[in-house]
Image (cartoon, rainbow, N blue to C red):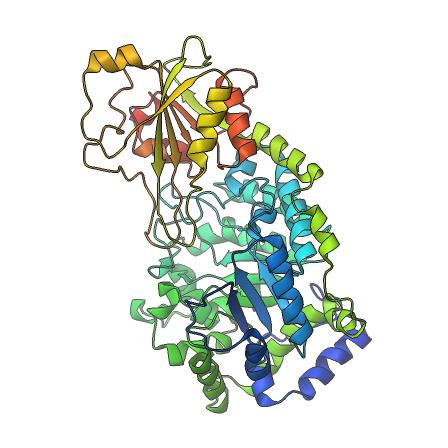
Amino acid sequence: MAKVNLKQKPYNLDEIQINWVKETIKNMTTEEKIGQLFFNLFFFGNDHFSGNKYTNKEILDKFHIGGARYHGANSEEVQGLINQLQKDAKIPLLVAANCDAGGNGACSDGTYIASGAQAEASRDTKVSYQAGYVSGRESTSLGVNVNFDPCVDILKNWRNTIVNTRAYGTNADDVIKYTNAYIQGLNHSEIITCIKHWPGDGTEERDQHLVLGVNELSVKEWEESFGRVYRNHIDNGVEMIMAGHIALPEYQKFLMPELEDKDILPATLAPELIEDLLKTKLNFNGLVITDASHMLGMTSAMRREDYVPKSIAAGCDMFLFFNNIDEDFQFMLNGYKNGVITEERLQDALERILGLKAKLNLHIKQSNNQLLKDKKELEIIGCEEHIKMSIEAADKGITLVKDTQNNLPINPINHKRVRLYMLEGEKGGIYESNSSTQDLIKSELENRGYIVTINNGFDRIKGKTLQYREETDLALVIGNIVGYGAENNYRIRWKAAMANEVPWFVHEVPTIFASLNFTTHLHDVTMVKTYINAYKDTHESIIQLIDKMEGKSKFKGTPNENVWTNKWQAKL
């Protein structure tokens, strides 16, 4: 077993900090030690995921959790929750957010800068740097001290939508370049960086929320791609790595030749991938956390009472989210008492956890009453400086993939009557498209002199072709398809069979398709001759998109090869 060295990177602790770590662990009860292994997910309002019946304070007092994440809410609500949690915690908490594109990942009113895909398209490391910079500044104003990003996956498979927008490239060089810049921006704030999803997503199309993920690369292929990415960040001192529920069969069998297909487990449960490859061969001296434990990539491996402690035994140091808090805590405690988690492994995990808290000096801030955040710090959320960065990122990133019919630019004289088609994805899920986007686009076009008619996508009746051509000057199709964890991959889903929103009209009137999220929709609309990737439905992005459609600003983004989805028709 690879043991942590708190004097070396990524900790670099002095003797006083190390002494606090060791003495704190020494004075813990067994239950307190077990609790430190858990990251709890807190909700605003009804806690419908964990079946929790406890107050937040009771969770801290009874289960002694080491880390916290939260779901939803605006900046004031989030800051209030974190302040209360830190106030009530005996040992200060690691508090995480998912800021992969800006402060919008930390609170609902945070500033979006650019997704990984948008940063890649901009071909400017300044964009990813500013995404990290704003992510750090806005999240730390709330009390967040860990960022579960950036995503360092490589988008090799165009069908993959779980990391489609979060990946910074289709090759190791781009991923390294843009994620290095992101972390440089993030490092302006006092925050822990957690990269993901070890050992690497993006080679297949399936989603670990629903099935065991598999990275099919050979040992040589992995070393030349994902291996380079992880070595780069480990060498640069990244503090935390999130293990995905992803198997790496070729490498696992190379490390353990006796393994058969039936023995292959996700990284979160595979000591050969955590202890042998990551912590020993790649010399990662930081903290490994599991991805969310309710995902099927983990739950389908074995009984929960077995995999809860086995994750720690395999080399993971923290366990992300309870299913049932009483049950999971007991599963972990039983695993320790039964010897699944050895004394040595528990001690090492605790040193890695408390080592990060010591690196941030959370214990000193707690004793000096400096851990709690002031409302005045929230003035940075959505500030003018950050909005300017968002506008700049949109300007550099929005990508004209093709315009083979020469439909651009448009203007309110020749294209006055616009038929607007809104294609949306999942509703009521963890993430969904903004319901106000249609109104925003309509309003912005009308302010510029266009007359906008919203198409009824449920209508199968197309009407008279000549009449449509007479009454419509421009068909604008907006793909605002958003979803998460309910499908293995997200594609265009028409509102009805053969609905009138399917682009039958591309040869009747000028037609433009613009995606506000996923970048590979051309697979389903190869007939479209003008296609744009705009990456996000923020107000700043919509303004930039229409400016570019009107020729008031140049398209500056560069598409990668995935946008063509291996279809020759997509390029026509």
